[in-house]
Image (cartoon, rainbow, N blue to C red):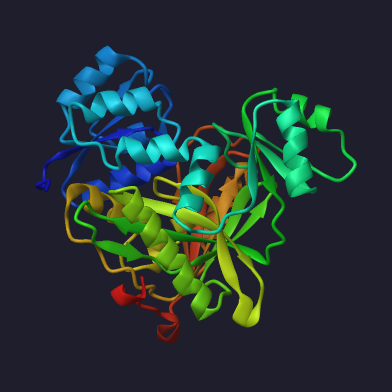
Length: 369
């Protein structure tokens, strides 16, 4: 258990690292950021930072010597880096979560082996295995790189009658996973926290809408049956326990069926704080960032109740130029990331709109999880 005044090392200096650092400061904890990008937004709010590559082991050695625990803001931290640090200082979440979630095939296999439903999938290592996967799963299907994909990058939708050779070359002829198409009603996610001793809390299930493969809005409460919501939280707990997880993570899910047949199936796991949990900054008693700090510090987890109906909207690219009008909107909370250039497709900030309706508030009892 960390004491106030302890130092949290954060790998990654983007907006997620920035918001973790801000939450840590409110709890009397210091942060030390390591990131190779000299313009990292998290550098602006942390007492200490170092600009170094993730494979600079001399810099990692010095970094580890100056912190009490290490966490990360993104899942593509090199596994060798995570293991190097874990041998010197507590790493939370551990390297196991990275090893599984960095590889889409390993992740899907892990979830399936837990008895949890995913989209049907097949490993693809060459054109012949792609053809075999299509024969087994049918079309349409999505061909994805096994590593380094996010916000729609590293994937190709294959429609009926499309040329498989062209799809294979479009993905760079690298190891991939073919996922059968899921006719889902909507996309949702569960953001949850787990401590080393197994203590667990899950925020309300969030309904997500994407535009051009980038999250546009997250809304709570989600349009979801009570049974499907319980299933989603149960899935999150099962995954967290199986990973021996410490910290906040998210499980992205598809809602399929309707009425009594409505259920959720797992799409992806994110071993970190998550964009779809940003609504918690103003719409919940405890934000996901504070919850993550509490979990990795070994402190009691915070209350996850909503304070009303909430919607988070990402500010992408030029959207951020409306900051003045957004600040004037009643009930709207503006969060800007301090990035210099508003490029197309770049997340520049977000807003959270909260309707403080006491009847809309919800507490998730522990025995429902």
